[in-house]
Image 1 (cartoon, protein in one colour):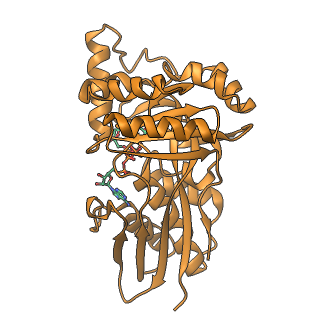
Image 2 (image 1 turned 180 degrees about the vertical axis):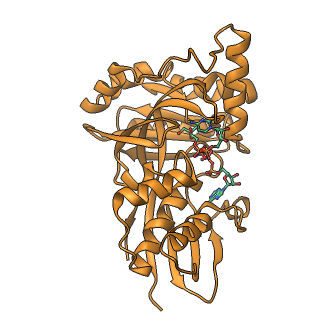
Amino acid sequence: MPTITVRVPAKVNVQLVVGGVRPDGYHDLANVFCAVSLYDEVSVTPADALRLTVSGAQAHQVPVDDTNLAARAARLLAARHGLEPRVHLHIAKDIPVAGGMAGGSADGAAALVACDALWGTGTSRQELLGLAADLGSDVPFPLLGGVALGRGRGEVLEPLPAGETLHWVFAMADGGLSTPEVFRACDELRRRGGQGWTVADRPEPEPDPEVLDAVRRGDPVALGALLGEANDLQAAALSLRPALAATLHTGTEAGALGALVSGSGPTCAFLAKDTEAANDIAEALLASGNCQSVRVAHGPVPGAAVIT
Ligand SMILES: C[C@](O)(CO)[C@H](O)COP(=O)(O)OP(=O)(O)OC[C@H]1O[C@@H](n2ccc(N)nc2=O)[C@H](O)[C@@H]1O
Ligand SMILES: Nc1ncnc2c1ncn2[C@@H]1O[C@H](COP(=O)(O)OP(=O)(O)OP(=O)(O)O)[C@@H](O)[C@H]1O
C-alpha cells in the first residue's frame, strides 16, 4: 500500500491587528504569519473508508471524529473531485494543541496536500488555497509557509520577503484557549473601553510597516522591541488567563528580545538573539514553573511538503 506523508509547520503571528466584527461574525485582520520549526506529520494510506488515528503526547486532546480538520479536508478534496474519501489518515502530532499555533489548521492543510498526491487529483495551488480557506481562516497559510500577510479574515495571503532566521522559544500553558472566546473577549474589552466599531465605520486593519521591515531584514532586536504591542488579541488572552502575564515577564527577564502571546494563546512566544540565548530563556521558563512545557524553534521555514 502506498503511504504519502506530509510534514507541516506551526505558526506564530508576529503581528495580529484585529478590526471590527463583520456581518458574517468574523473579524477583519492584518495577520503576519511566520512558519516555525514545530511540525505535525500527516500520513495517508488507501483504506476501505475514511479512518483517522493520532499519535503523540497530546493525542488524547485531538478529536478523531468528523470535526477533525484533517478528516474534513480529505472529505472536501474528495467531494471536489467526485471521489469517495477512502483513506486512512494518521496524524503524528507535535504542534501544541489549542495553543494558538494553528496545529489543527496545519493538519487540514497537510491532509489536502497528502490526499491530492495519493489520489493524483492534480489540484492547482490556487484551488488548494481556496479549499483551505473553506476549512478555516488559518488553514491556507501552512500551505505557503515562510512569512505572509493574511488579510480578510486571515485567509487572503500575500507572501512577504523574510531575512535571517529568527530564534523562538514557546512556553505552553496548561489547557488551551478557545479562539472564538478570545475574539469575543477582545470585542468586550473594546466595547468597555469605548473603542467598539460598528460594521459601517470599522477601519481596515493595516500591518505596522516597522514590523514588516524588521521581518524583511530578519532583525530580531528591531522586531523584538515591537512584539509587546503586536497582538491585538493579547489583552483578551490575558484577561481570560491572567497567569500568562507572569510567563511573559519571566521570559523577558531571562533575556528575550521581545515577547507576545501567540495568536489567540495561551502559548507565549519569545524572540531570542540566537540558539544559545533561546536555550537559556527556555531553561529559565521551565525553572520558574510559570508554564507547563517549553519548546525552542526557528523560522521562517517552508510550508507543507511531501516527505515520502
Ligand atoms: C487567532 C488566529 O489563529 C490568528 O492566526 C486566527 O485568526 C484563528 O483562525 P482559525 O482558528 O482558523 O479560525 P476559524 O476556524 O476560521 O474561526 C473560528 C472562530 O474564530 C473567530 N474568528 C476567526 C478568525 C477571524 N478572522 N475572526 C474571528 O472572529 C470566529 O468566532 C470564528 O467562528
Ligand atoms: N487535527 C486537529 N488537531 C488538533 N485539534 C484539532 C484538529 N482538528 C480539529 N481540532 C480542534 O481544534 C481545536 C483547536 O486546536 P488547534 O490545535 O488547532 O488550536 P489553535 O492552535 O489554538 O488554533 P488557531 O491558532 O488556528 O486558533 C481543538 O481543541 C480541537 O477540538
